Image (cartoon, rainbow, N blue to C red; front, side, top):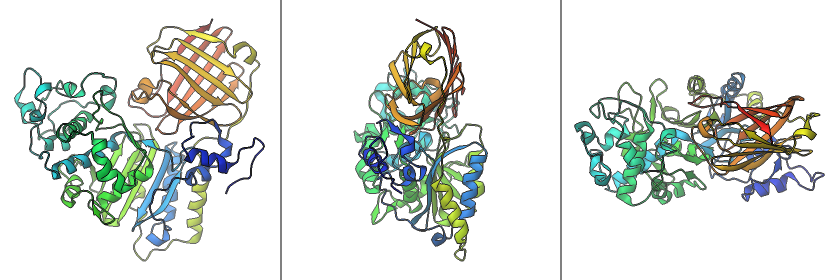
Length: 519
């Protein structure tokens, strides 16, 4: 599968070694990495055993139908790993996603936070019935109403805080003051324990309580107790301004790590010979705690399939099928309105045969072929425009706009264009291939299009082409996130207009048009 050295002196083997060593931010032509190589030969070892679908009585035809149905419905499925009877039996990454790449997990994070809560309870730091106000004397509002005073750890775990509104992580992320103080500003309109309202704010407070009682962030508290024994490394977890893990979101790790989270709970908190979580906690967290809401302790319950699952926005899943001894982990970039969850449960657990089922070699090979050639981004093609001498390197002053963009420059070379943008966060660069997809690193502002995530270093695989001599489109695939942005630049003499849209968001998918004039 490794190609010989090519004309530019780089081999696929050398590129793979560079990525495995952490040089993935380097400019890498996509043609150097075939989908099959990018998906499975990146040098990343997750420590999980493998076997074939047939060995685990899994129907590869149904797995293949799941992949193809997602493709037919324009759903950006990024990766999946299927585990049954002690082995990974099917897995794939939709190029340029790959096994070594981490992926932001959004609200799947909540189920990881729950592990920290369970361990802290077992360590005696607090109990399910402790009241929230007892931990934060210095942060409480001047007026403490009865409902707020009654709120307990159990109420937070079950999303029954008494709040009448849901608070998204995108609302807390831009706040540079105490998020604990912000939590206490949310009106508690209902008696806690009586009203279900899903909210990332309550998961943050669980994280804050772990930190207040243990002296460590949830991320650091879980490191020796769970992450290290599971072989999970390289994860990142966003934090509040005072260092509290965000709790409800912000965790970035690999697909294999989501799978391990599910396997740990499938096995009632046990991993190999270690009991990482108490059996009682693992059972309670993944059992129905709120009738009518399909919710446990920061885990969702699907009563029809008798599965439980961790779920994050835009298609991040760790789904446990205890009756079938199976776990399915998924990453994706799915629009909010798409029936992706329904699609999953239409194919799983249907894919799990009984102990007498053996798939045909033909169907098994069809699934293997599909995965080996799984590609999210189309083949690159080179285009050009006679306008290049007039626009390349020119700076366009952008008219006042809600995204605070002040200037844009596109500098073209034979094989790439450097798109530079200045805004309230500074100066940003996205390198975009013209002859091929290329990978680089950028801190370009995502803003409302990216659920208010504003990372300073995001890996992006990008390509641009001309629709006609006046219209240039760039595709930016942010390969550690759910997002792919399409940016269309239109040139009219000394004027430019820029339209940017993304694939998945809770806010609008399209940003306001930017307009400017060459300096």
